[in-house]
Image (cartoon, rainbow, N blue to C red):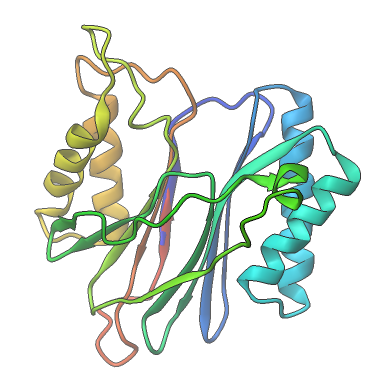
Length: 231
């Protein structure tokens, strides 16, 4: 797994979290609204709730519920978007709960599988979610060996071009394909993806841009230690 943060949060309002156990990879992106100290505090409370629930063996629904409750209790006027995931290392089943973030991107055989992981949006974590009529939902999909899942924040696709338009999902998808074409390890593919965006002459990041790349191989076939790469 690999990840990179290409923005300057200034107050720690956005956070990447991952934990690898013998059976499961847990990974999450948490992003509180705003760029001030209160936003950093919101992320800290969300992270504490996440870790406490995980230690207690909570599933994704209970984990998100714990964060909802913690934010509603301690910071009722704040909320936090996020996507929380679990990957079963033996079976390759990928499970996720998306709370107000862009949907994950599935990369298979070097190509983006269009809308493969796109599901109905859910509210951010915190007090607003506790008043929502829609229950939280956990989605799952079995991955194939070598599949990659990319999580990202909308600061990537909302980067501005020289002409004033957005970098956009189409350009982002093209960048993913180019970065994956060489068949390199996930960490190197993510590095290429980041630089293809940052080095573009007509892209201008206006918000925090964070990416997390997960690659799965079955234990008997994996070419290297499974990892999550953050950017």
